[in-house]
Length: 295
Length: 66
Image (cartoon, rainbow over all chains, first blue to last red; front, side, top):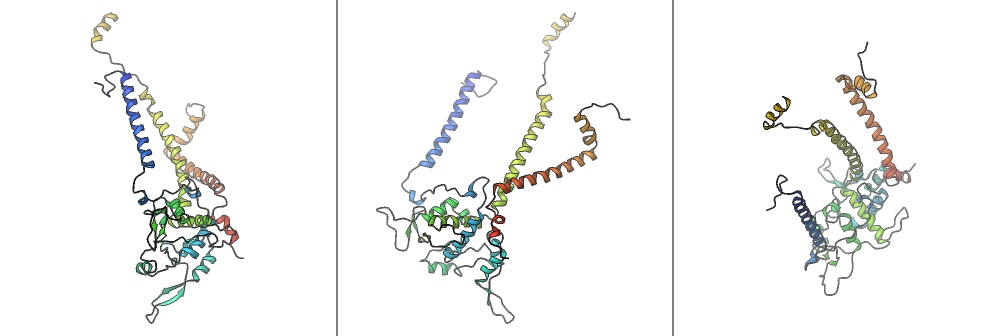
C-alpha cells in the first residue's frame, strides 16, 4: 500500500503518485474547460450566439476610454435610442468634462422641458432643463413604455453593459447582428430575429443603419462605427469611474508587488539564522563510549 | 568625542538615522513624502503619455468657444 507520507515509503513511488495526481487534476481541468466552451446541445438558441471579442480599448487591463467616442456615442443615444430607452441614472452634469464642455451641456439640457414645482399657487409648471436634471425619460412609466412598444419594455440603459452577460461585446453584436432567421425558424409577428439575443426573438427592430447619424467631427458614419460609439457611451454610463479606477489599479499593482517582494526578502533575512542552524542530538547511548574515548 | 564605530555607509546611516526613534520616525515620514511626490509625478507623466489623445482634456480644445 502506498502512502503520501514522506516518512515512510520510497521517494520514487511518492513522486510517481504525486505526478499522477497532478496530471489528473490538470487533465480534468483542461477537459472540463474544453467541454464547457465547445459543448453543443439542443437548446443553444436559449443561450444566444456567443459574441466575438472586439478590441474596445477600455477592455484591456490598463486601457481607458476614448472620450471622443463617448461624445459621438451620446449623440447617437440622443438621436436614436432615447426615443424608447430611458437612462435615469445619468444626469446632464455627469457629461461635463467627460464628453462636453459645461456650456454645451447647459445648451443641450435647455432643449428639453422638465416638470417642476409646485409653485406658490400649488401648480406644477414646465421649465427648461438644468445641469442637475436627469437625462429625460421617453415614457412617464413602465405601462406607457409597454403600450408604445407592443407589450415589451425597453430596458433602462444606465447599467446595461454591466447588466448583460458579454458586456460591450454582446451589446455591439446585438446592434449589428440583425439578420434573416435561418430556414425553419419562425419569429412571431412583432418580434425580430437576432441570433445574439437569448431565445433569438427580440422585440427591438434594427435601428442602426449606415448614415442614420451625422457626426460633427467627420468620422465616417457606418453602422459599425455608430454601434461602436454608442456602445462606448453605454460603457461609460455604466462605469464612469473606469479611467480613474484603472489608473489607481496600475499604481496599486506596482506598489503592492514591490512591497510584497521587500516583505518576503525581510522575512527570509530575519529567519536565515534559524533556517540554516544545525541541531545535533547526542544520544545517551553514546555518552559511555565518548567518556571512554576521552579517558 | 564619539565612541568607536565602523567607517561604512551602512554604519553611518544607522547611527545618524536609525539609532534614535525620533530620527528614525522622521526619516520614515520624510522619505515617504519624498517617494510619494516622486512616484506620483513620474507615474502621472507615464500615464498621460500612454493615454495621450483619448482623455477629455486632450479633445476639449476643439469645443471651447471664446
